[in-house]
Length: 176
Length: 200
Image (tube, rainbow over the protein chains, first blue to last red):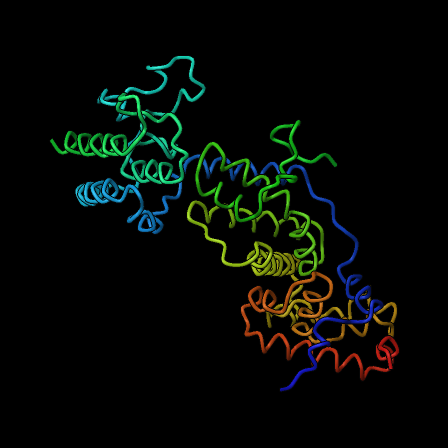
């Protein structure tokens, strides 16, 4: 059916006002319901692991640190295949228990990020292969800052390898 | 009525981030997820109440529907992906919950009408006492339009949605949206009262 396109964009203002009037008077929000919704949301969001965007990882391969990424990818695949709970990451408690990754709290008591583990680049609360990707992306974008994880005085591909090695070491430890 | 603030010195509804950026922040998890969701909630709450009111007709029912809709929304996280405007996502959720709340209330009251049995809750607007008080006026003419036609008119000219957004919100083809608007306007142009408002 042919349509006059103008009819979809204009309507007499009096008719628009009448349509608006069908909604009735504006309803004020309710503070108690706001509190219910927001407290429920806080609880839900605090107890769910963050969304890990694995689908975007392939975009990083082929960049200036492609070699390191390829190695990290291979390690990541091995890690994921061998860990049935890969999506959950490695809980901070497990890391601390194994004492293989000192937390910032241990290394730098005055740090403002006392809850972050060394190598937890994406702030997920655990260290996994996605942190290697996150660091690789920062390096590509020149935003790695002072993430000198292997203490060689530089932030470069070796720091990506350091994360990957930590993940594999942790994973091997769990299997053993 | 005071607005809820997690931090009284900040106004999350004035968060400069776009909906998409806030959704990314919610997906990213703590510590930024809860404030980002709160910003989304405060930004869209009033819109949600308006849409829910449109279908529920009563304040308490509308607020119930809004609450249920945002619970549904936050349970989508993490992993929620926005493919259209957030209002377009929220619209069918709010509509469904508002209609459900209205039907539940009627059931509770033992007032089972034909409208409820058919799942077409707004068809009584033409006989609603609020509209019946002024027979023959423009609101009554608009209220007498079929629900589907009136709905697209409201979405287009009151809510300001684009035709494609209306199609997304209602889950219908773009051509159907255009046809409904076309038929609605044709009826208005043919109505002895409404046609006076159109330019000759």
